[in-house]
Length: 214
Image 1 (cartoon, rainbow, N blue to C red):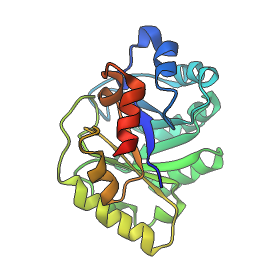
Image 2: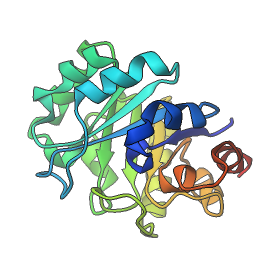
Image 3: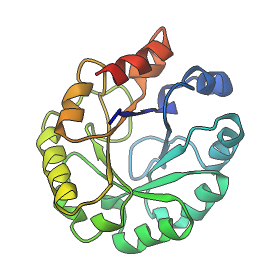
């Protein structure tokens, strides 16, 4: 099964966003990092940018909500054009309710885990998820060095998904490069988010191809 490549627009040039998105059109998903300056120490974009992205690409918009109280904005992002909506386990007081809210909009539902959060946090919602986003860096900034401790977590999560007979996709975000992509895939990941690894490359299509070749 070929990997799913999801360039993160966090590393794109927002002054030329349409051209930047076109430059990664050979990818599978477009990853959209939403940060509120509270859950993570950075502030990025909202539903209006997602709405602007929707007509300029046919790629699924993979929206990652790194925000407090994400339930307040799930419907706004779905109406703006998000295909996948991922919330953080650490940000949701009632995680099952948040997952069900995402599902009720028709979007694919995901939950993200920070590097310090055990995969066991998903024990009672895993069967409701379309994807699990494992952070391999601490969320909030692009271009960080990956945290090696996430590999055993990915392996344990993949074993659990397989044992339950689920099709849940494990996605990883943080420090993904062609040189280490194979390690993530061997551990059980299927989707690779790469921001600077793609957008800072001189040839974005070649960078995407190199990730696939891994």
